[in-house]
Length: 68
Image (tube, rainbow, N blue to C red; front, side, top):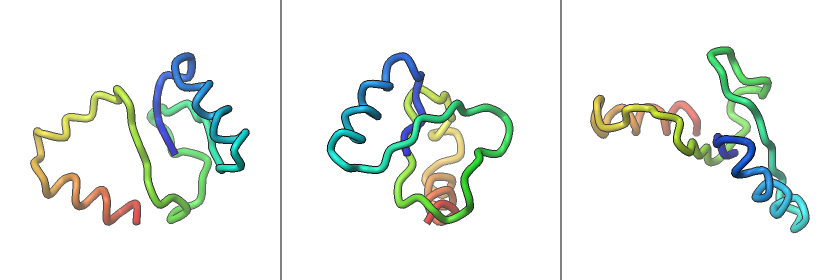
């Protein structure tokens, strides 16, 4: 899954779908996403302005464990 501005990455979703790779384009807001827990191997967030450096490496590891 990739979080990014839809206008810039819509072509990437189409590219993946044409090659048989499951892809989803979703608008991210402050509400829970409409996907069940534990369904993604990787989540990518482009320009989502999450201050990864503010919490250090433990924050990233915790988020990875949560998503895994």
